View 1: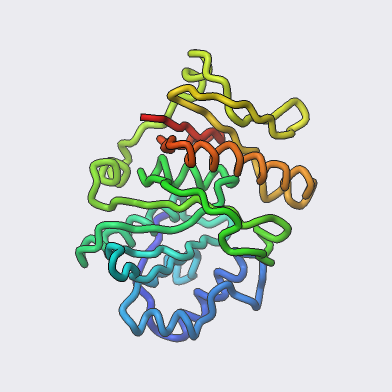
View 2: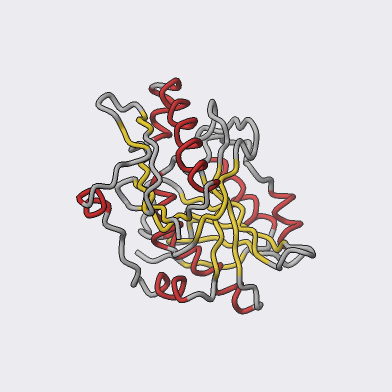
Length: 266
């Protein structure tokens, strides 16, 4: 079932959007961004959208324009949320494409946001489904967070940068991007710089190969609840492996649905 995606500016719509974000982030009644801030953003010409099915709000996306000199003008895409078990499949992708079209219509060619590099579905979505890049690893970027998704963990993030008019972004919009084949890379003798051990523990290895592969756990959010200590081990291990590789000049070529980053050193 497809959703009706439209821009929002009326206060009551924005109150519903704020509460939707509160539910998605596990903090009912305490939204991560309040309706008064949303109203100010809408009034000043920024991007706020809601996705509706049968008149019910099931998703939303908020971003604002940034980039004062010497930085280039870009859209900072701050928060995207979709209610669990939504009737509309692929809604996150549809919302991002709606935002992309909004930007391109206003001659905004770059979009940026941050993502938790341990959440593998987000890595796959951002890097492989959308065709964005990830140029920086940001250590504990937001400090301590208290929501139901991030509580108890350092807030390391990847900076995602999406060149909206690139060939890769256009191919992604048309559903034409292909997934990287990690099994083939492993068959060529690629040793992972990070992988899951026999008991789910992170295993670090050093490598200076031109192509590196780096694994993340199946579900870090569930792991934070079931074994917080192990979740913290994964945070530090990924910071050393992925962050360290970026510091050494590697670039992230993509991420797979099965939880692997692929990095290349040109």
